[in-house]
Image 1 (cartoon, rainbow, N blue to C red):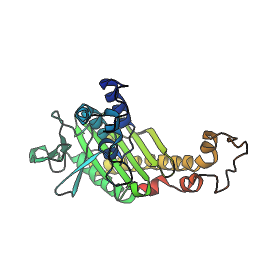
Image 2: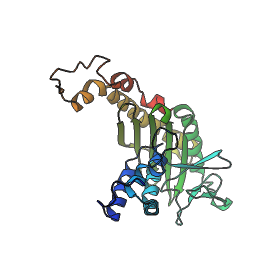
Image 3: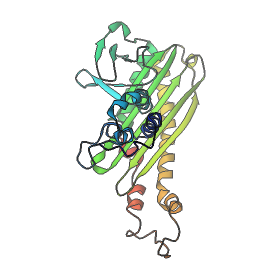
Image 4: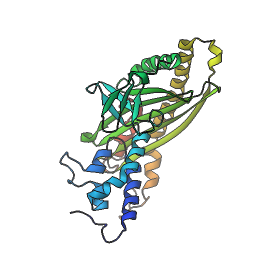
Length: 297
């Protein structure tokens, strides 16, 4: 049994190390890190199993697994896979299950489903926001998914778009979260972008942007459709700003960041020709041309 850490670390230290590793795991690779890769190009034991050296300790990672699911827009599906339900802190119920507000479905992380029509949220503004978000997603993230919830008088929006291509050794995800309090005049959001590229190396882009803008429900005098349209219009503008900024920064990696990461003179004492395809380890061409937004659509 693999378990190179056995005898060197205590059980608590192993669990702590495994928890930290799970917290850094890119979307699309979580199951492989936790349970082992089944695609044949890695060994049968996962990194977590190797650290713990004992499958019985996996139960102690339940909270870490749950938190990572909430952080990365993990999704379960209902109705034979036709309806995605994003797991967030805003649709989590007190018993640890999650509410799908459109149908009233209550689901668990293992995709057990109970339909409770009384749990359907027919709030007028929530429905208007849902319609506006759906229209936006068809243009910006046609293969993405979204969730609009209402809790304690506040509306929460979660937008997730991802492209997982393990066979091409790259994964990427866009996850934005917006909180709207109708009693306030500011809308606040967080945008998380993760891109992992691991062909002949291991490069990860992980960026978080905080955003806010002014919006007031009172301005629309009860016209929920107009209020929702303007809300989503401003969300789109902020997300476009982040998209452009990340693409510009990403395009500079080859000319700046990667040069700084490597020594100016290697062991041979000869300067590296950064413009030679022979010396750039595939990163210049591939990373500079890898458009985050386009890949996540």
